[in-house]
Each structure stands twice: as structure tokens, then as C-alpha cells.
Image 1: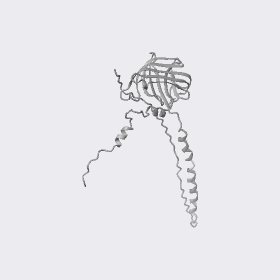
Image 2: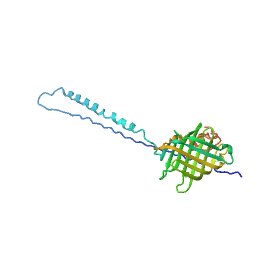
Image 3: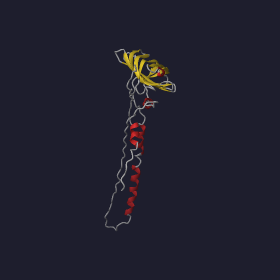
Image 4: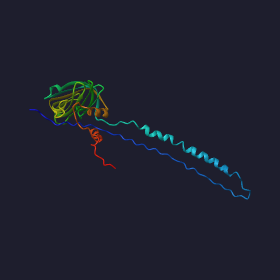
Length: 262
């Protein structure tokens, strides 16, 4: 009996960092003194010479503006996200995803995590509770998210791979085991792959294992890279991406209509 499943939605994160800088300037108003001396002596003709001191006042007010411009530029670089956990510095990510109705689309690979953007979060005992991030795989990348459900011996996971050999998006649930160096999710799930984007495919084997050789704080993950990977074009998938297809439809010219002559 053919199993059919609805299409799977992939959620991505987005963050915004806002910096506001204020700069002020002062103006020193110039003053003009009118000194008129009334004497019984004949009036002097040298009164216009009092205009000479007024020229020096504007020159002093322009020197205080230059230092104020540097303040906003100094605060340009700042961390965007404080990710939880630690960055994996050495280790491996292995996955075995088997599609029941499409064995040719199944995928079993191992990925070196050195130099990757894969991170781990630990529980209060030091065991691995969460694995998330992006790693180089073949000619592309592999994205992973696995999480244990606390006191229950179960976990959930999401694996997306596009590396020239494997192309799929899978979500699964199953038993979860972990220590301070190994996290393993073993269960079943559902997924999408070329040839099954319209109805999805049942996964009778969903195994994701992460082995950690070393890790160190802080965690690191580049959001633009993750968003670009998850929203990558998928051959054979027809789906509306917000802000893309909707804009294309808006630009489609309407059917011509007759215009009455003036």
C-alpha cells in the first residue's frame, strides 16, 4: 500500500541587530558690541575699525564638529547572536536515511565536523542534549538538528543534505541515547527527495549519530549560510517562497482590454 505524507515545512531563524548613534553640535552665537562715545570733542571718523574683532568668533566654533563624527562608526562590529552550547572542533556526523518506497534515494554518509558550524548543547550532567548546525559534505552541505526529550528516552531530528550524491529533507522521531561524547537518534520518519516532492516518502530507518572529539565555547553559526542552504532550489519542487513567487505574479501583465477612443 502506497504511503502518502504531506509536504514538510522547514523553519529558519532570522535575527536583527540595531545600533543607534547620536551626535550633537554646538553653536556659539556671535556678539556685536556697539560703543558709541558722546564727547564734546569733534566726532571721530575711525568707528568702522571695531568690525575687525568679529572675524575671529566663527573660526573657533567650527573646530568642535570633527571629533563627533567618529562615534557611530566605532560601534559597527558586534556579535549578532549568542548561540547556546559549544562549537564542535573535531568529530563526525553520520546518518543513515532509508526511504521505504524509493531505495535509490536513500543515503548513508559520514561527515567530518572539523571546521564545521555544528554545535552541541549539554544537559546538567554534561551529556549531549542537542546537536545543531551546518557542515561541509561532498560538493555541498549537510544540515542537522537533533534533540533529546529530557527524562524520556526519545528524541526528534531533522536532517537536510545536498552534496552532489544525496539530496533530501527528512524529519524523524525515535529512541535517543547520549553521553558526553556521543549522541544517537534511532527511529523512523518522513521526508522529501527528488521524485517524491508531491507526496513525500516514508522513512523506515532514521539514524543520526554525532561523535564529539572536542568542543569549545562559544557556539558559532552563520545565519545567512543556513538560510541559503535550507531555501536552496530543489529540482522538481514547485513551492511558493514568500516574497518571490508572489512578486512574480504581481508583475505578470493583465489580459489586454479594449480602450474606448477619445
